[in-house]
Image (tube, rainbow, N blue to C red):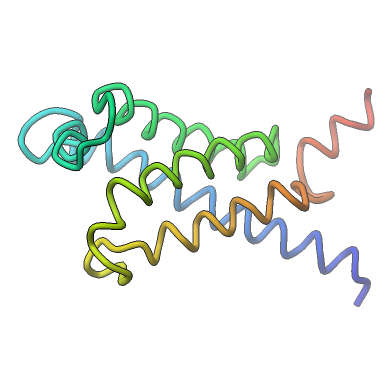
Length: 139
């Protein structure tokens, strides 16, 4: 198999899985957990002593949903992955580090995997199976 084809297939797979995961997490923050109330996303950010918890909760949720959609389509994928990496790093530090490693305990395991996947897209780009690539032909 051609190396370029394999590279593009893997980048597409990473983008799709990462995009779906981020959309699901952002959706859950806003529509399932809710932003208000004792179990709400803002309160969880406040309890974890995230600076500006109201702003960060909304910024995190919106970045995850919009960034996830951009990753899936491959439109502005590198920028979206960079923004998602920053949000993931902030969440990693404030929301997950105090809980150890394992995802089952809300530890750093999942954010670490998400962060590394974001960095793959930042470094290698979206690949040829992306809107970025398709639109670059018209530039």
